[in-house]
Image (cartoon, rainbow, N blue to C red; front, side, top):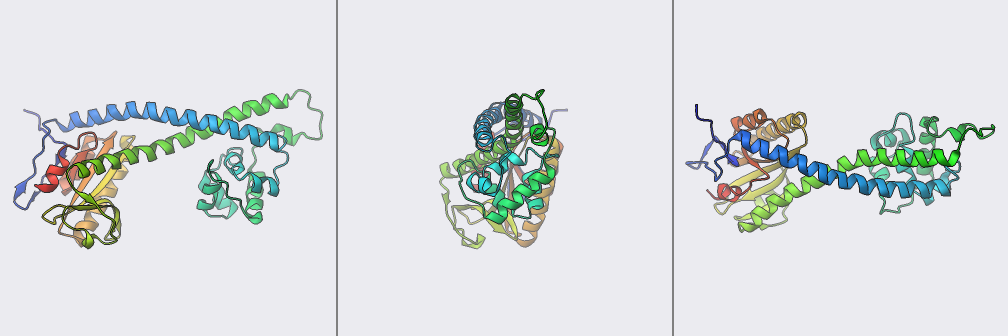
Amino acid sequence: MTPVRFTAGVSKRVKRGIFRMSVSDKTLEELAEESREQEKERYVKKCGEFQREIFQATEEVFRELAEASNNFRDVDIDFVRENPITVRILRYLTEPILSRDKFSEYCDVGDQTLRKYEDYEDDTTPQPNTAEKIIGTFEEFRNETLLPWLEVEQMEYHEYDEETLVKKLQTAIAYNIATSEANTEYRNWRATIQHDAINDELFEAGFEKVNVDDVDEIGPGEYVLELSVEGKEADFAIRNRDSDLFLVEAKMSGTEINFHKRRKEMIDDYNDWTDGRPDSEIVAVIGGVIDTDDVERLEEVGITVFWDHELDGLSDFLEA
């Protein structure tokens, strides 16, 4: 049997009397394999860069904080207020290591508050009561194995080489932070380049980006980024020159399991949008490591699928 050829953008729906075709003659399996290989190469290179950068920055911060606090003996309210980045290090010195959300919860402060304190570029000073909560949470969950010199302050401990321990701890904490945060940095970066690719395709096709608050304010040949439609945010809301409405979801995934979740989200959004806006057509732009069965499920419900590494047919699709 001749394999079914899929496209960079495929729809099994007939809309405005036109059956959707595309410029690509690749099979779905070929497109998925191309996307998988590109994602692997991109992840290894870019995530590695982020990890090295974060590791180096964190090692420097750790060393400065250790020197300024007598190897974390003098972490008091004044110290935390003068060095808010301390919180970024302290929560990796707990047992178990506390995520920002968990640390925020136990401190009884908002996540956004701790987020700005953990920014290397932000020098916002926490209020004294916030600094006190941060210290209290650290003291309650402090990992004594990582900081043995704090537990044996009044004892003879010649077997400990404190500076060597601090140096090893510096490296270990910096590595843990870099490993965790490089993946977050990569996901944010990957989503940005996906959105940029869509934006570039629309711009080159002559669409104009506008800023409006309601989907009905989008004019022919215009598009909006991140617009709420029927209570769900569309990454792109577009009207072609015939004023037909297209709502685009951009999704990327590093694993097949993760994309299972993204597929369910997209189908839920599709149902909400088509119920509330039956005049709209839903488009998914996907990339990364993706199970072809999930793509077929999207197409079966009526979502037109494009791969972010092959967007040439998107503008033609919008205008057909």
